[in-house]
Image (tube, rainbow, N blue to C red):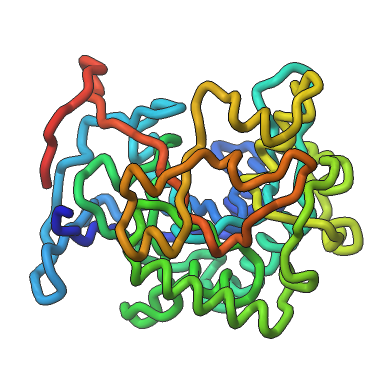
Length: 341
């Protein structure tokens, strides 16, 4: 395995970007859409992206993400026109706040506890904010430049609140320990990163915090029992009694189940997953710790369900294969190959 390098950037979190807050942009009221595990950060453009080859090395500015696009299921620049980088918090997954598959007649749904997770995160962030803004740093360890962003052009990493210019609180870890998110491990993570989230989740489970009131769900439920409709982009009031309901389970299951219920045609959920053109692949955590993401360890996600809808795994027992993303030249739209830091 190649040596991993630290990639980071400094920036500002604006609480106005979180659901259900709003802020004025160009004389228009814009309602925030950020959920608990996807945060928009206004990058410090002067510093840009920084790299560090080892713990005692000095930080070096890299221009590797200048004039490129991230290509996967979507094509976007790493930094948007307003100067924001969208960060997907590594190792954790909050219940869906707003999910609508690209299927006719699909509605925008929110999972139970999806609103609670983002509201509780905001309460914590507000304690450390000044004028609803928080200084932070986003960081990740990668082998290649394209590993830093997922297939939806989101930076994958940890976000840490800064206080007096020092790292103060890791948001990923806080969410896991408070029981507001599920563990969601990917092959792009290091063993150490996974073990740290594991410890936080075990702490939340022992205290029966939020999601872990019922520990974990063992059988599929109809989507109508798991969610309610959400009107996106409008003023919405958070109603705890509506949101804090069971059952709830991993968003990765919920998203696929919603598509399944809209298109199932008599198949079981297991058959639906196994028949998909683009297979979700995963491996057991113990195998990943032992051998890494070796091909003979990988299996279809559908293998982890029975034909009658039993969920045959616990959220912390599986490591998912990260969907591939590529870097494109923003002018020619051609794939940039063998790009190195």
